Length: 627
Image 1 (cartoon, helix red, strand yellow):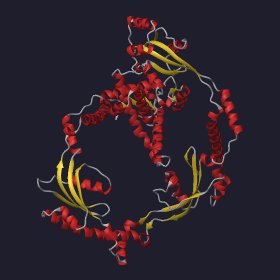
Image 2 (spheres, rainbow, N blue to C red):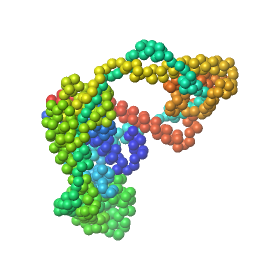
Image 3 (cartoon, rainbow, N blue to C red):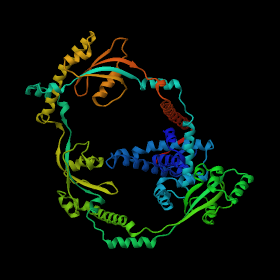
Image 4 (cartoon, rainbow, N blue to C red):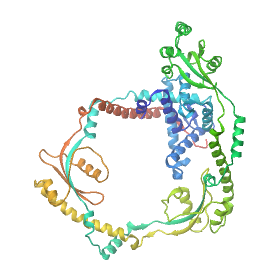
């Protein structure tokens, strides 16, 4: 995965996206990479002396939970996203990431400050219309619990970890012998003929008696068990339930806009470019200074001299800053420049910089027309949220001891909803939620007739329910399953007839008779499939799978098979030839792509092996959650 990511994504922005979303969002939003969240008192693990705190773990669990819910929605089973369910796998991932990060540090893998800053400004999540937005950046960090001081450390560490992973996966390779073996199987071609004897054509002519139905039902009642079922009525509260009925006046929108304009703080943004010399001699610095003094193009000099691989091809362009993106000395030098002016050499931890101020932007407040729609939406959402909170605070009292929920629903101004019967596997929509199912089938609700507690499915989604109908588990009555049984018995009889016909056809083929001629005599469609590859869908996929399960036929002969498909059709198949795939038959681009894919697979396996080895060698201590 890392190899293919590197092959398909280019540039610093792509690398930081892989690191940022791969490590921060997937395994946890974790400060321990930078040692920012320390604290021995609440340590849940220690890896070679480095602590993983309970705060680290809880952040990681929450991020994993958010990922699962974004994939499956709020109807995901509650036990799947519980702290108890997520704690162990998330903690294992934190430990594995820690040992990899430590290995990266031991290997001397580091990222320059400039590269980190450039990477941050290139993250699309921090940009508006393609430009880095400092306020958006600060807001995002605040939501994730980071500061502008420690977040670059996290990114730097993650980039080093990514660099270490690439050093492992990038060294993987595959041999031509391996490639030939894989191609021989994966690109194998087979030639075969077949006919399908459809069961459907026989069904209309088959009669099933009542006695046969009754006997089958009596002998197979285990197939027709009805689970316990309930039907419910329920009140569902979300802010959106109230939003549709809220009107926002033009005066309110205008007042909110005026307030925004009054509090709007104009921000000066400077667009910077630089030439970075990481280990420059005085002679090299003087050489560049001389060319700048002579009026040579800054962008061309950056391409020729800069050691910042992330910006030099763009003429040293670093994007915009409001004064807190780059190191302090860098920002001070930039702030002292006029547009188009280039600084004298500036030293930071990254090296020596020549800094050019490309442009200065003064932000202006948006117009009323530009903001009107968003403000209306915000005011409506805020009002709906207030109504939701008010309704939620009253809900428990309104439904307490209520014989039905229609009165509370009317009091709250929301609709009362009802369901069909559903089992413990759940119904549709919100009735598939595990909390709702558990409440509906709880003894106090299902058996005692009580209203459920208020179920807070999310922060903005609550529900209360009552059972209106309940059916115990049992066997479906014969009349409810009669049609199913009749269909089953018809197919069984039809299939038995087809088996006999198919076997007769197979015997004639074994005797050397012509397949196409026999198919024509029996009014069957003769199908020829040459140069067939593995796979396929539906009945054709079943036929292909059977053809590829047969042994290769002897020269001049064919391998025969008779089998039934899932829908009851009978198939007679004759395999004529088998040709292994050949690497030499692939063009140059195909061979290169295959070798890269196999190397990527091997690289992933090698990285996993390195991770296991490092984990085995590491001193890892896990502590009880109370420690």
